Length: 336
Image 1 (cartoon, helix red, strand yellow):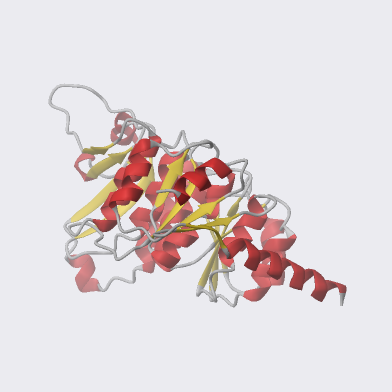
Image 2 (cartoon, one colour; image 1 turned 135 degrees about the vertical axis):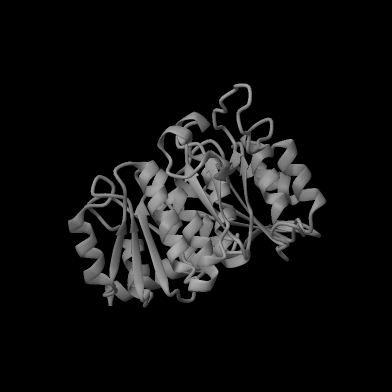
């Protein structure tokens, strides 16, 4: 009876957090916020009625969960955060609710221990695949390979691929992959080419370490160092004056009829200053084709404000509490 009561109270709290917190004449604003990153992750997941897959990632380190945004949006699945050796109660509840055919655990044993994987298996009896490399860069490659495998391309489609089109974000910060990864996950296989996203320190490092030719490096997003030398191949660079403007530039591609051309009327806003609440935000991109925009804590960046005013946005979902995205940002959104 006590367990049932706790569950009921949790669900009631979840529903309360999903209700609009502000409603202007033209735009609805909702905030999704738990007492910590794990509860926030579970609250995002409650919006999925079910899912064929679940994605598990560390809530203590950002790289695997952030890059998991590609996978989340491609397979339309939530990202559930756990600790290295522990599964928070709110996440246990979601694991019990879902009946997936497979669970993907992102990261090695330094992120999520084997004993914790066994705990996950005991709660949600589904096959589990660990997706991990020796570091964040190799794990990102492994996630990308899984994405390609899950597209289930026919032999004829494989034979028709003429280009592996690679995008890169810095592996040294959290914010570029936070908005870029969900976007790349929505880029479906197209005749003749496939698209990937990797972590990369610099173009020079890509040339040294990648098995792909540098000509495969189609575009760079955000703060990646570019080798400046005569005769060097330069990919497309998507970079604004700061991380906030770059997130708005990527968001614009959702509406671009030559790129995604999606009928999306919802956007997600997360902190561009710290990562915890944003780790699972890709779930809303998976559900609503919603681009992720970054914001400072106390005010909207002018580029983000301009994007919201100039696109058919009807709903804004803030992911994170007021310590991440303040009430003043919420009020500013309500007056656009």
